Length: 597
Image (cartoon, rainbow, N blue to C red; front, side):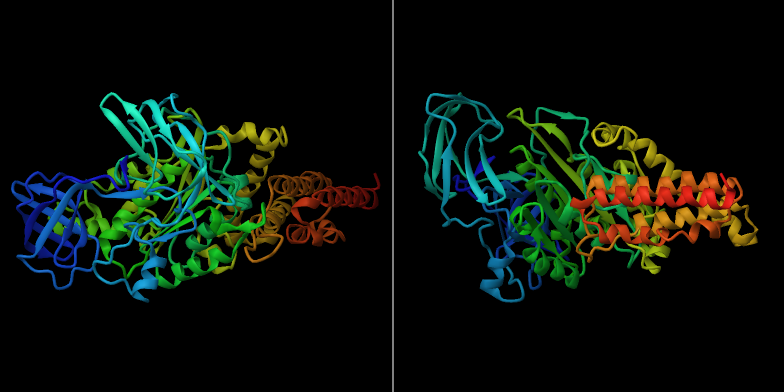
C-alpha cells in the first residue's frame, strides 16, 4: 500500500500516435508496465495502460478525449491505477475512478470538465486519532494500531499496510491529524517505514487475507421472499437478473437500506442518470431505523451513469470492491451493490472491439467469464491479516436484453454466484413487488445459515420447505387450470390454490413505501409463515373431511390475514400469535358446526 504522499519515480514521457475512441496508442513510454496510469494530452486525461505491443502502449482513457490528437504528450509515473484509502470515504460520492463528485460539482458545476483533478479525500480535514499501540511494540501487517471516528456509525481502524512488519519506532499521541501527517514509523528489514492515515491500493489487485471461511450468518434484508425462501449469507454472492421495468434497481435500493451489513458500497454502473439522481438525493435523507442515524453515515456511493465515459464504467466495479475490502480488513461486514454488471460487460465489449479482440458470443470478449469470476471471487467471509473476521457480500444486478436469461452475461454470472433472484415481468406487470420468481430463483446457502435460523425456531427449514412446496404445487396446478378451469379441480386442490394465493398476497408481496411493511424482522417472517401453514394444515383436514372452500373462506378472521404484514409492527409480533389462536379457534368451531364433531 503506497502512502498518499509518497515520492514517485521520475515520470516517463511519451507521445500519442493514434486515437481510436477511448483507446490511445502511445510510444516512448520505456519501462511502463501493464495497468500503470498515464496522463494523456494537454489536459492530463487519466488513462490506464491495458496492453503493451513492443514499443507501443495501448492506453484506455477514462475521460472525454475529444480533441486529443497524435503528437500529444503522455506522462506515466509508473503507478498502477489505484484508489486512495483512508478516513473520509464514508458518506462520499465518487465517479468510476474515485473523483469526488461533490467537490467537482462545486468547482465545475453540472458537468465534469476534462482533466479536472481533485483529491479523493480531504487533505485539510483533521481527524482525531487515538493510538492503540506504543513505541517498541512488534507490529505485523494488518494490525490495528489506532482508531478514528469517521462517522457516528463507523469507527475507522488504522491498519498496518500489507507487507509491512517490524518494530514500532514511534506513534503520535491522541490528537487531530490530517491524512498527510506521518502517524507512525516502523523499523522493517528494508528500512524505516513512515505510515500515514491514507494510502493507495491498486484496484485490480485483491487485498490479502489469512484465509477464507464458509459463511454461516444470513445477510438479513427485511425482504421476506429473500430472507425466507432465497437467503444469502454474509460473505455470499447473488445476482438479480431481470428485464426492463422488473424492479432490479428498486430491489437493490431496498437491500442497501435495510440489510444488516455494517458498510454499504453502492455502485451505479452505467445506469440512467435519473435513477442515480434518485439514489444520490434520497440516501442522504434516509434514516437507519436501527440506530436513528442517517443511512449515508455508513454508505459509499460510486456513480458512473450511462452518459459518462465508457472506460470509467468498466473500472467502477473494481473501485467499489477495493473500498469494500479496505473496510472488510477492519473487521466490518460490507455489502456491495453493483447496478448493473450488464452495463459493465457492455463497456468491456466496446473496449475489446476497439482493441481488435476476437469476439465471442453476442460480441462479448472471450474473457468475459474470467472477468466476472474475478469480481465475484473478491466476496467472502475471511480471517483478516489481523485475525479478525470480516466479510464482503456482492449483489450484482443483471439486465438481459428482452429479459432473456440465456444471454452470456446472465449465464456466466449464474455460474459464479450461489444465489439467483430471477425477476419476473409478469409479476412486475401485476404490481407484485418484489417481483422475484419463486419458480426460477434458487439459493445454495440454506444449509449454511440453517444453524442461525434454528436458534429462532428448530423447525425453520421444515416450515420454509413446506410453504415452498405449496407454491410449487400451485405452479403445477395453474397449468391444469388453464386447460380445465379451477372449478373442475378436486376441492383440496382448489384449497391449495387459495392458500398459495394467500402466501403470495400476505407474505411474498411487500410494500417498500409502507412504514411498517418496508422491513420485516426474522421473528415476524417466521410467525407469518406459521399462520399460513396453520391454515393449510387445519383447513386441509377439514376440506378432506367434506367442507367446501367457501366454508373456510367465509371465516371472519381470514380476510385479516393479508393485512397482518402492514398492520402489526416488528416489535408487536405477539399479536400475530393471538391472531393465529383466533384463526385456529374459528376452524375448530367450523368443524363442530358443519361436521358435528
